[in-house]
Image (cartoon, rainbow, N blue to C red; front, side, top):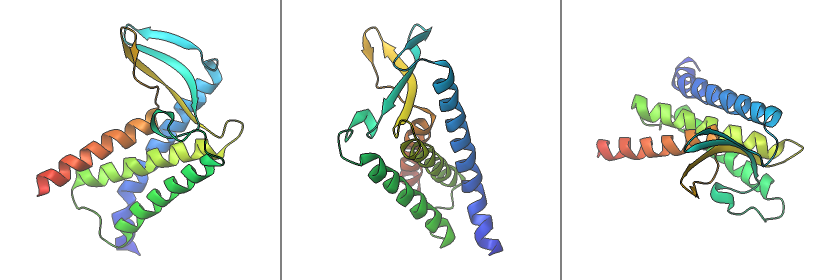
Length: 160
């Protein structure tokens, strides 16, 4: 068990840290930003409070019980990544380990949003834009997942 815990400890700590930061940032937004309000911060960045019941860019947001389906898929991703480390099948690169940990944390952070009342939807609050062109609002968990997925691609590409 000791060896398996050693393999799992770093990604678990990273996942927990990412999930905690994600949930604290969403708590702050829910507490201080009125829903659907926009607070200008920089000439290309606003804080907002949007609910996303679907996945990226609000896709699949009209499916009955979609929040449960998406939460279950997030749980499957988390369990799959844990199983990679448990069975010693995960990449050995420290960057890949970090990326997988942050993907777990991001998946867990968004999964929590989908399962908790009153919204049963992911809280998005980072609104970047240029002139009148806004990127869809997102959150810290989304950032962890996206940046880590790109990092994994780079690591895999470099290892080949």
